[in-house]
Amino acid sequence: MILGIDAGNRKTKIVTEKGVYMFESTIGEYRERKLVERFGDDDMVFEYEGRKGFAGTLARYESEFGGSRKGDSKAHEEAKLRILLAIHRHSNDIVNDIVVGQPISTHSESEKIKIQDMLKGTHFLKVDYGNGFWEKKIIIRRVLVAAEGCSAILCRPQQGLVRLIDVGSGTINFGTIVDMRFIDRDSFTERFGLETNKTKDMAAIARKIANVALDKWHEKDKVLLIGGGAIPLFEYLKTYFPNCELLKPTYNNQELSPAFANAVAFYRIGEMMYEGH
Image 1 (tube, rainbow, N blue to C red):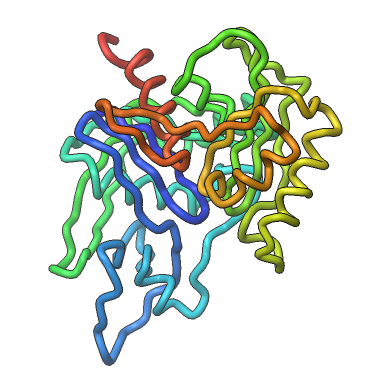
Image 2 (cartoon, helix red, strand yellow):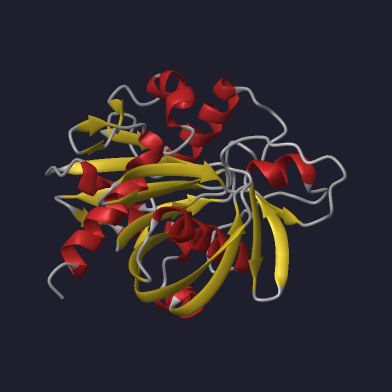
């Protein structure tokens, strides 16, 4: 199966030929519970390579040290677990070809190789969704690592200059595309997001984002806003960028939230690169 997986710090988004999906990304330690409560469809207990833990909503409520590792690289164990959980939840195939993301600033060959090396191969993952453990053998045959933010232009291909702001919980990607070509000089990642600040004041966060962007960009540039923070920040960012728009990707003629833009783009890359090969 081909999967586009955006393993975000707050939510993991998945696109396959069968549909679009999302689950909470929190990972936490395991412990025996005296009272077994259910918190939602994202409750998961996992076993992988000798490690047992909680994931999803269960980790958020019941792990003392649950959370999500934030930063400008996905070359780490937590991202690996999110991706494997995504495959376990949404693929019935043993062999899978995937496209995942990496923030713009660390989208280097060395970091991409690290991600590919940690994901490729055979994995055995057990997950209990509330009905007992279900073990799957997962073979990840091929891995492509796409640039977060910039790749979303595939959801709305167009000519000319386009800026993309990808607002996540842990990072914000600022991408620049000219005639469907990535411009490295004017693209970058900032290591802050909606869940890295003490303030929840959206106007203040938008001002910070705009101040960073306007160091390199012009206020009249066309800006496409994506990511989990796109909708709450849209009206505030539009005061700085009048030509700002929400990028709502479409999949099977269904309009989706901007939060799915990366995952839809990753899946389209997978379709182009894997099918027929």
